[in-house]
Picture 1 (tube, one colour):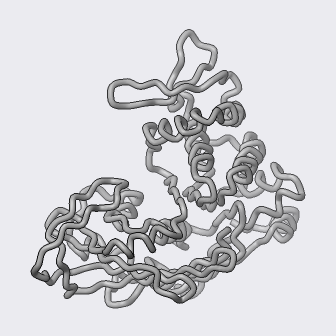
Picture 2 (picture 1 turned 135 degrees about the horizontal axis):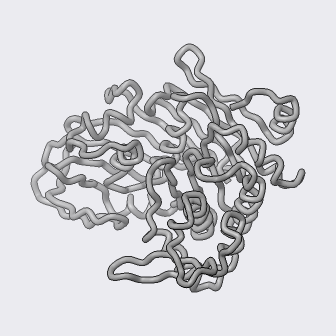
Length: 361
């Protein structure tokens, strides 16, 4: 389990040290205190060797067409857009410390001539005999202070290329941890949900998913994946004359399905959810949290989510037993003199704060 995370020089953080992460960790705070940025930092840390590692952050923020140059693609991840300073992140997981250092190099010597980029696939390396001087974004990884791999992200016209050697690929992937990001406003991908549902269906684990969704849609009897052309969509039987796509059952049902499927197909992994409260009625929240906690424990997965909602925090305490609530940590981010400082509420302190009706959002 991830225990601590330190971020330096990333976006609005000069330095931020977070600790006491738990099975469920909620991150709150006022606007512009960096709640979503913490999730983005986690994802960047584990999105190893992916040419789209910086593009993803722009997509999640709603950026449309982005010019392919270092200032547009890379400077937004640096504090104050200053690419002369390094970004450093360190994660402590059990007794292991992993660190990443990211920096910009205007004169990187590369032998790469072209790399076909295919989403989700480690790029095939093609090299030339003559070195080329190019701008690069460098990523160096360390495990317990021992260097474990390095790669260089390069812009070539309208292509993102990666300069990496095969031994480093093996080292970077050796300690790979599955991580998934579910954004607050981005529409969930029904094709990805269908693939995850299919993985569970093969192992006969779909009844669990149906039971959880009944919290929001009590009439749901079954789920099935139906292919139409090149696409597959999850349909549900809710007692009508025909089955209907899950996304027609409402935003809350579709969102809960995505979260549960992501957890169940990411054993020993990490799931990041931005503004988790969107789409659910407050009366359903204790049961929703109970179901999410159960499936996290079943698959040994961690959930880190941001929220603005007092109801989300309060319902988490109401939905879990006194023993289960020990699996919860709440972290509030506050801005003090342009620095972001965390306030950590472990389970007992969180319960006491809610009983006294303190403002902890």
